[in-house]
Image 1 (cartoon, rainbow, N blue to C red):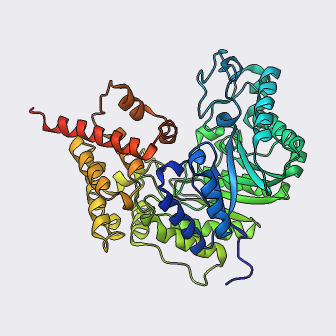
Image 2 (image 1 turned 90 degrees about the vertical axis):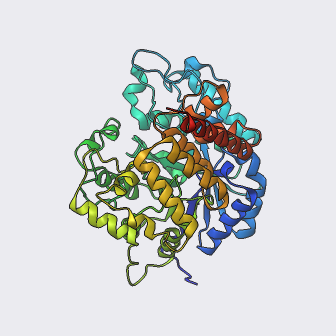
Image 3 (image 1 turned 120 degrees about the vertical axis):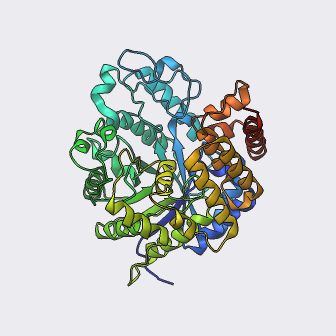
Amino acid sequence: MNPCPRFPIRGANLCESLLRHTPDQLEAFLDRMVENRMNTLIVHVAYGFKAFGEPLEMACRERDIGIVYYLQTSLLFLKGISPDLFAKDRGGRVRTPLLGNETRLCVSDPRAQGAFRHGVRRYFETLKVSARKRLAFIDSDGYLFCQCPSCDSLGPVEQWMVLYRILLEEGQRSGKDLAFWYLSYVWRYQLPRDMTVFEQVEAVLFDTHQRCRWAALGEEHALTAYNDLEALGDSRAASIPLNCYLVERLAEWRRRFGGKLIVFENLMLQGSISCPQPYTPQLLRDLDYYESCGLDGVIYEAFEPGIESFSGQLRVLCRELVSRSETVPPPTALEAACHQYLRCEVPERFNYKNQFNVLSYLTTSRFDGLALLEAHRQDPVLTRYATLLRAFLLERTSAACVAVVEYVLLHKQRFDWIMIGFNLLRAVEPPIQQSQSPAAAFLAADKLWDWMEEQPDPLSAADEMIRSLVAVLRATTCKPS
């Protein structure tokens, strides 16, 4: 046992996946964390916490795993607020007429600030705190910041800081033992103007979600494209590849922030279709950089459903978080093949972030796809899944979709079957046409977890919905031409 680990904070982010777990799967995931010497769990309070909160907290205490509660203000503090206080576009129209995952406030409106403070105070008054509680705050997902003249002049970071100061003030007012964390995310990677606020902040999570996964942070690569979207929030992102931009911002935070600085590797590393992700060498080089600039830890996104294809990679990464190996772990067959192929040829319009796009490209006739199967060769269930998935990625037909989803439903314990069903049923061509309200709502859901949160029995509801849509596709494929 290494008495002084390479990184003190070694964690997992369940993201919005809680409701995709059975109680047994959640216990298994926590045991996996212990086995891999992970000591920190990020839990999204808005998704699944009502169902799993108390048993999850007890199970973490038994395993000496610390919880960081991820609080999204749009989902916790804005209920009951009049939509006319929501963020506006440049024409003065409300950007999200209905309260949702990406709702923000017009922070320059004193009424909006007052309503937000009321929601925060109400939350803190009811918050149960028996021991020090770590709270990580984010304003909202996405990019829908207020564009009214007053807010627009502030920019995204300062808009968020208006609300973050209120959170700090109300946290102190509550008198409860709270530790505040800050999330540095899209359009909010740069430092706030007034860093004195961060004297009250225990830790900063630096979210790398926008990175190019085919290169380590700070490395240039033909696929590490410039990010025009990020440049709308910070013009400096227009002049250098995004991976290099992120390294510059991370270095700024390390120079100016004296608390804990932790990389929040929100990269969907495990993937959303239970396939191996060929990026371990890049992530290992990242760890060398993080160590060199004195970072305190790394959080990887992971969850138990469908973890088999990711478990080996997670084991390697966690081992390196504890102690750097004398020899670099060799790449997998898939990683070596991808590296060799993309070094020789960079496809046009290649979307390096979209898993369907990546795997579709890597399983075309120009790249025979054997590397994808190589990772599963010793397991007939996973090999068969990879074969069926490859056919779907190449064809996108109803028949191919039915074959994959039905196979996954037969082996629920091996796959993230809900996410696979959700993704493939929405990607089939031609699209499923459903006027029936429940099915249409499922297919049109912006976030799967929003839909699941509305279901009394999420796992049963997802099973029933996916099977009903498979039946629709099966009926379509059986129709005479």
